[in-house]
Length: 311
Image (cartoon, rainbow, N blue to C red; front, top):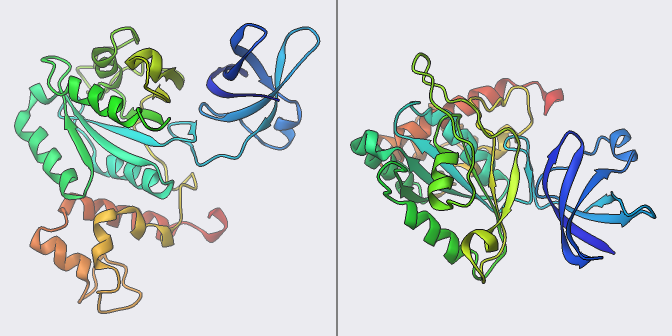
């Protein structure tokens, strides 16, 4: 039985890294079996797959093995850690989009790590963002590809996490957030394409066009396991169109709310406006960040209005 991991897919052709060398090959090009289209199955980067060799030496994907999780954006399967990249400026970050990404990760049991980029543009703002997400209980690393701040910290973090496990890690964030520039600073051998920011609209050119996994052993050295993904940037996480999760799941995707569980005056408290709400009390006292609660309310209103048939 030939098994492997999908490293990338372009135009229906997928590169799969084999678990064990086969006829001298460590990676092969494959296509999905014809029935995948009828079964509405789509191969994702990160998928664990079972392959079948053909008499002409080619391969096709026979089966997609069970996934731990799968994301629509970034399009990845079996993700363990997501580095949520937040720029200080150019473009200014949207906390709502950031918190949507974090909530999607939390729902899918993916560990979010916050990476603040371009700290050289506004160190004061960088420290404010660091405080917000550290108070929520997340690991946060402040970086600048311009002056090198935090670059070694990210590398050391990855080295530590990949010595005892084999995670799939991804860097994700808005277009222009500086993901590829930071990855090039951490891993110079990657040589990822980077783009300039539009001066008029402060939106980055999306230089990463597909999601691809890179071996962390090759990037960090022997003893490190797993894969690292750069992902296409995005400016929208559309909860109205896509089913990321349902309203009843929302509370659990804000980890700092957990301490309020069962402490509100009303059993069916929405944590948006009720008297006697423990979450609101903690927001008022500063224990829960206002930007995080605002993101919660925004998501609550979207999910509350979503028709049942779309869920």
